[in-house]
Image 1 (cartoon, helix red, strand yellow):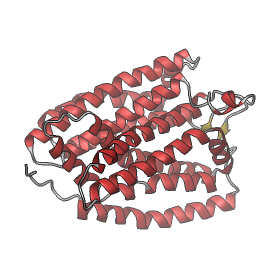
Image 2: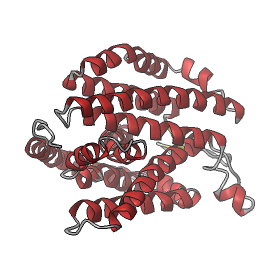
Image 3: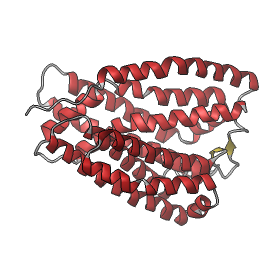
Image 4: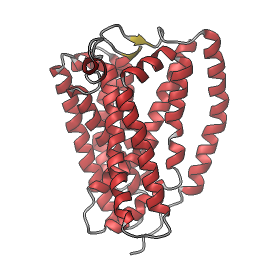
Length: 336
């Protein structure tokens, strides 16, 4: 029971990081596809939207690392050893993205350096979801070995399935960002642009999601069969698919509240299906899977960890709600 509850907190923290922090990185991906026309208004909308909350959203990733380190130390050790290259790239991307946004957004002098800040912001915004997805794909596939450096530290995360999951994660983050940004402005033409981007990234998510299944089959992993034989995963996949129709209707009519709820629900369905499929495995490996139960810390450690998480939740969630209430005011009309 203690192990399952701790695992649930771990899954929830990862889910919230994707829903909130993922949209911040998606905003950087959106910048790549901006056309010169209306670029300034789109950029201003993005900066205004993520400025007050982007640091707070990293809390969920920090929380996931803390839970993994204290609650499942064996999994933490295996992950930080086998996947130290993509994890390093992930941390570099997160740091660069934050620095580029801070210097670019709050710089008192707007000169030629803005181009470099913007470039770094975009590159790091792609770098983070790609590495996150590749790590996720690697922990599920369990490729690699105990031989040379390449087979031990490259093949586990640099393979066709992991790359496909990386592209899928990037598409999902870009989609979330576009959906959220529709409600961050009252300028109709900017809303239309973000709605179009949301549709494009939603289609991209469907295509890259199909690529994930195809690449898994290529790597010898019957992913579709695994989904079919896991009831919760099957239901989640069906839910994520069925939500497409009302989601696109909400995009067309730009019903902000329903649009955001449906977009978040679709991501929840996707991640729930993935978590269910992988449970109880945390990290697959040819040498033997590291599971939730084999990697768990002693009972007394889990008790203290859960107590801390419970008390922390009473502080974090009201504070986060208050933060959004203060800064996420109704979008004002943009001024050209």
